[in-house]
Length: 126
View 1: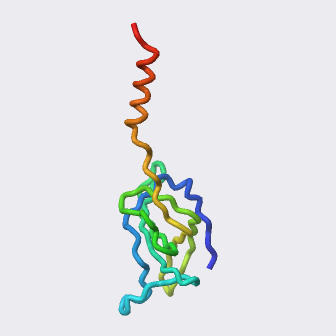
View 2 (view 1 turned 45 degrees about the vertical axis):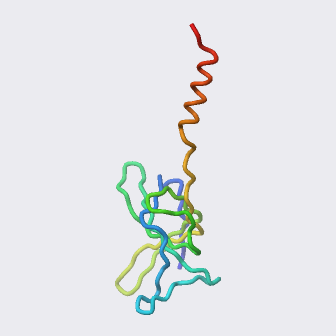
View 3 (view 1 turned 90 degrees about the vertical axis):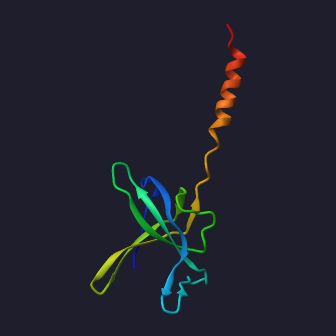
């Protein structure tokens, strides 16, 4: 099965739609899928929105539990690959990645505006 690398920089803002869940291989026995190294495979649903396009949700399989990824949070996807699959008369595209990690929140704007007011008070005066 040939994988196709995906340039995530062209996908716009990526947000977690559904938090990490273990991927189930057998729903009757609740068996969890593992990779070759024995790591549990998790799926994370991520919203993708390119400029001027509708929002799409893709499920990304990732080895090991992504820490700190919560619904609604902005995420970074490392090593994203797409691959086409067929099973009988069904077909589709699946996604896997090396990692899904949270994007750190930006520093509060209050500190920037406070330092701007302090510097304005030093040089001004009429």
